[in-house]
Image (cartoon, rainbow, N blue to C red; front, side):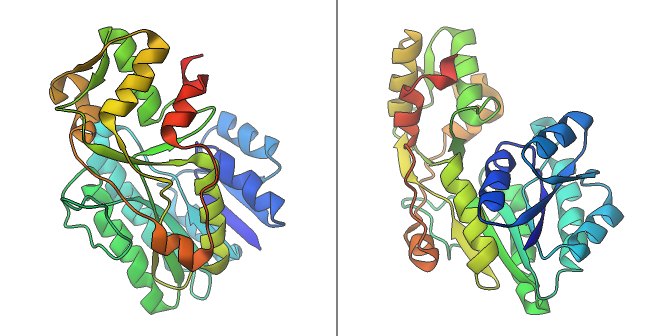
Length: 291
């Protein structure tokens, strides 16, 4: 299968491209910059220069591919509404030419008060991933137009060696600045997580096997207590775990303040996916986040 991947040089993309190539697929990676193009090429994939605002480029690439995995998203949280609008237009442009082909799109696990969220939970438009809810619904609806569309919901932390910009890396940076290992409230809020290599494997399985309209959860750890995470980070940095007001941590404080566990039993059953890599606490204890 010839697969078009947006965000191919990003954190998950850089794990997915080798996963796809190793399974015998060909990959065309979208690259906005020369540095991204070089990274995609170094992994052994073909390069297509462009960005999410280049709608004709996206349509042409999707039409000529056998399937598409859409990972790219603008993560500048000061311009999140603009990023969501850009993403919605890009998704619609690609989906319009993918009848009969797989289209796998990344989203986020929802928040369900009092219990872990499940694959059939329909987000109500609230919480940290509210802005992308409509896009995910649109992708699922594309199954009614003959697209083999599926949504892979990612947890708050997609962790692993080499992560420099995810929420764990950001939290560690803030802890260093503040001189404490910060958590919000009483720290019992739970954070779902998955290792980046496990996530990449699920994206490939979704591309190859997912039924039209499927919603999947790339969740390894159902819920890690933020206080436990603070303890592990504090031990590595020799900092005391300390509660701080959510506002002192910016956008990350909002996310840390919400109890948002998520489960993936149904996904594991449907696609025989098993997360086998280290969990979040074990991964942070390895020390690569602190180099």
